[in-house]
Length: 125
Image (tube, rainbow, N blue to C red):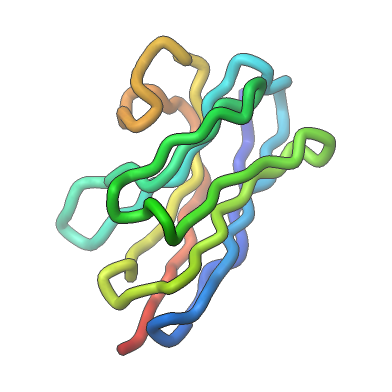
């Protein structure tokens, strides 16, 4: 089993930055993909960014490219989402996730088996 604990959400003005963290524990992650998703009330959870733990290869949703950066710290078993130039439309609950199905697309919801509790990000205009 994998446990994921998020931190770092909050309220920020448009144009500001936030850094989300996700501490992973419970298993080794050499085969895992790790990702960030977000969800608005009444809407489906959507992919934001993903990273392959062993290679460090990354992938981003179009809405995140150029503004968000996903990274990992192998020694600490933690991965991050640095969010810059935030917009009001980035407001959502953000979830970190881990999966053991590296053959599935990194942006696919069903590539992930483990989820954090979610953290609210609110961007004011």
